[in-house]
Image (cartoon, rainbow, N blue to C red; front, side, top):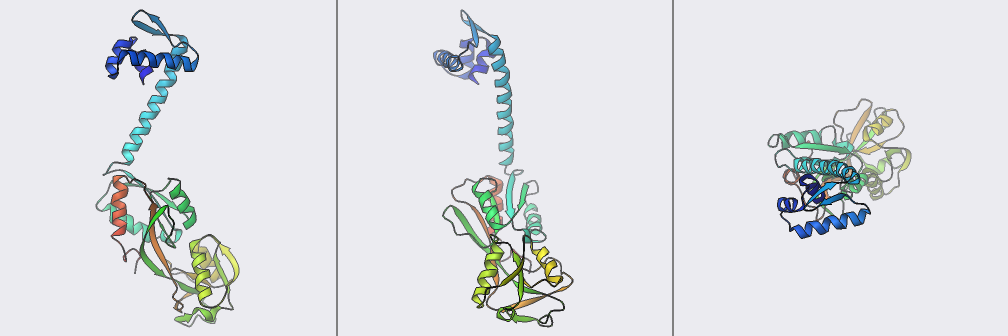
Length: 289
């Protein structure tokens, strides 16, 4: 910026006055800049200066850089705008069809111009993006317990044993999970929160599930169940799926907790603060009943 001012006014004194710095400070800064570059940027003519060919080249690059900085500053200011800023929000795939659209609709009733960058992923991947600064907030399960994160439990969701509609348990309304101990299971891949919960609930029921297939998305698992390839422990679907029956698990307690997480010590912009406050106000009301 100092170089561009001297180049514009072709006079160190006038440039210093415009920048509000002493002339001697600005003169030394220009000398240091030329020394660092190893090339003369100015031809001096008494109290005036003019750009050398190298100076013209450097000025063009400087102006492009300053314009890029200004565009970046404007983008940052826009994202932080209380009325029309941006929230980078991550959530689990299983919350994407019904829960998150309902949340955004309710929030935007009072904040109609706030923009959202939405990211769907499994829990661990979202937490990594949170730590990398790509996300402001995320809805995840299990609720993380990590020293660098702040997490708040918002709700819990009952898991059901999903069986094919011609399965020997399909006529039942309720089932103890131990009754399915000899069944083949279809589950999410290791690393997914729901997989950890499935393994833990089965262990509490006294068995290790025999895994037939592993997938990346709950509705794909329902399709595998409908095809007779196994049973699954899953949250309720947004829309009933033909070919399967969903059984209430009476024992052990089969639920997954849903929580919101953010990076500890990370300053929030006004729109992020507003959306965080909104999410926390939905404790016990996050999920459709």
